[in-house]
Image (tube, rainbow, N blue to C red; front, side):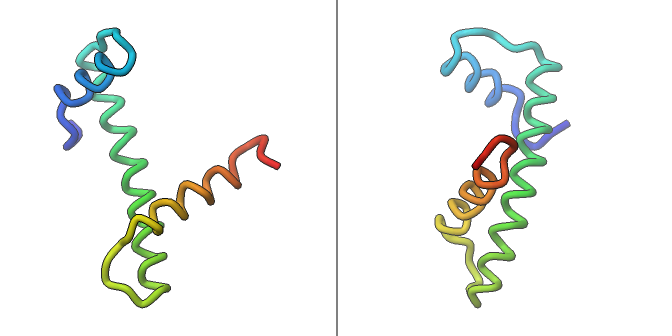
Length: 76
C-alpha cells in the first residue's frame, strides 16, 4: 500500500470531480502519484546539488514541470 492515504485520494477525487473512487482505484492512484513524486524529487535534488544547495526550492520543482512540458509528446 502507498504512503498517501486512501482517504486523502478519495477526498481529492470527490472534491475536484464530484465522483467517488473505489478502494482499489484510490490505492492505484496513490501508488502512481508516489512514483511520480519520487521522479520529481530526484530531479529537484539533482538540480539543487548542481546549484551547490542543500535544499530543494520551488524553482527546482518548477524546472521539472517546464522540462516535462518541453519533452512531452506533441510539444513543439
